Amino acid sequence: MTNVLINAPKTAKKGEVIELKALIMHTMETGFRPGTNGRIIPRNIIERFTASWHGSEIFRMDFSPAISANPFVSFFAVASESGKITFRWTGDEGFAAEESVAIDVA
Amino acid sequence: MAGTTRRTFIAGTVLVSVLPLASARATPEAMAAAIKEVVGDNAIREGRVTLDVPPLIENGNAVPLTVSVESPMSEADYVKAIHVFNEKNPQPHVFDARLSPKNGKAMIATRIKLGDSQKIVAIAETSKGEFFSASADVIVTLAACLEDLT
Amino acid sequence: MRASPPKSPSPLTLPDLLGRRAVLALLPVVFAASFALAQAGADKRRSGYQDMGAALQKMQDDDTANPGMLFVQLGRQLWAKPVGAANKSCADCHALADMKGVAVRYPAMPKDGDKPIDLEGRIRFCRTARQQAEPLAPESQDLLALMAVVANQSRGMSIAPSDDPRLVPFREQGAAIYQRRQGQLNLSCAICHDDNAGKKLAGVTIPEAHPTGYPLYRLEWQALGSLKRRLRNCLVGIRAEAYPSDSVDYVALEIYLMDRAKGMVFESPGVRP
Figure 1 (cartoon, rainbow over the protein chains, first blue to last red):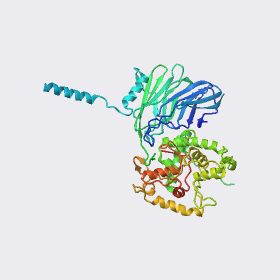
Figure 2: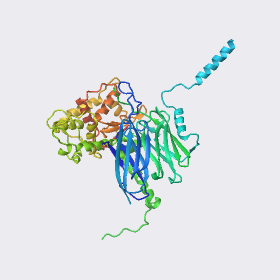
Figure 3: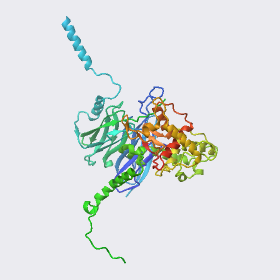
């Protein structure tokens, strides 16, 4: 299971704009760095990060090699309904990770 | 004959010196080309976009960056995409994000890699087809004692 | 019953003058000022944290943005995982909360042994001797994660080195290494970190080199790393041959550095450039 840290409130009022933060462990190898033998270390990055609220996509971000290792993203969402917020990361070498948090919207 | 040859020679030299030299990394021109791919022929307006990045960072591997765009984020008028570019990394893109009224606020924070002191540009695209931009200059320094990978 | 003092016109207080909100806004300023004043009088030592810009300080302070916390989380998972022929997890012998205070008093002298051991060495010892599992390689992700979760239990505490008399010769050995000129650049640790701390070297402030945040996330490494890794960087930086990785010189240096940092606040996992 990939190492992920999510910061999301557990409750929110309907219509409230809340901040969501996600941090994931990933090397984000750019594909531009030479290794110890002088040869370029092959690229290995997360390419896409998405978040969906109760099944509907609320955020999408396409990463480039310019995103730092162990990528951190913070964005905002309008609290719509109680349910799961699901974060997904996909990338090179078939990388796929998913983490969900539950939120109660009153 | 001598006069024509000399003129041709000078003309040739001028032409050669004006041709762009091949460069191994991204340039301000590459960044401009990447921006044009997104914006097309539309006008880019100043304002509404705030690019928050430290003017000096002690290491280019993780530069905190926040982009925020003033917008009602309503169905009638919202930010539908934020694109960030750089001018001196090996490639000009930083990230592309898609937004909708479901976000409530057009503000994204992340950490980026900068290979050198350079300019960052953020372009916001609204649902009305308008483009706004902001730029910031970052100075990147480096520690004195680095690791030897070998 | 005491007679009440003669009534005089009540003095104007700050809230009267500025309004309550302004006073609340001023509080952090006042706190910072009084902290600085206390610092000026008492402890003048600076952690590397104080030499960083505000953006990196914020990265360290936010547990959901500090990349070191990913390693703490991993360490928490590994703490509970049974391994080895003994099929024991760390949790089977120690509650994680019992690790509070450990990182701030290490390196320590094992009960029956003649060489001091650092936190990394102690975890590796438990792994093979108690759990009877495959040894954890130095600077491996799992070892760093376990170090991170143990060290994190001491976050906020004052560095309190052990007063075990058997450590004294090693502390002195560490002090001697610290003062000794080494490498092609012929520099000692003291020349940069005592004599020139606070000044700039290649545009960056030279820190006082207190190990207040280890293991820490160094942006240069893009990963968590130990004090030993940082000391190796220093040695390479002054063009000296790095000591072999199992050399007691590193532990001796750490004993000296922790003593030099006695009383400073422990910040693990720190973030540093």
